[in-house]
Image 1 (cartoon, rainbow, N blue to C red):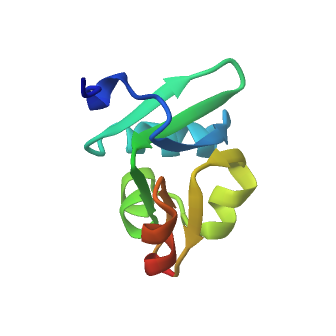
Image 2 (cartoon, one colour):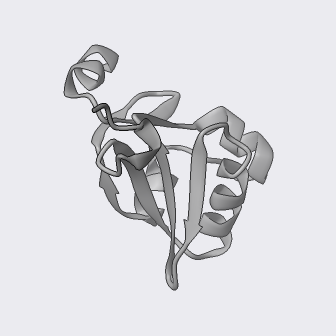
Length: 104
């Protein structure tokens, strides 16, 4: 009996972003990304997706009007789950460790 993908909780990756002016803007911009779920919590936003998540600096900068880079996201991010890769253009999170190694 095969399990349907939507029933599997362990293949999510995600980050927790502090609720703040910048964090609220990032969460709002991420709502428009296909496959991304933005879950409000009391003091933070949980931004998650199945298998992989990309926080593209250029896209987020355009949508929020902020200068979004790795430093801003890391200051706002209290935790993450998945394998994280930081590039010049984005922060990437992967469920598959091999895919994360290939992205480095």
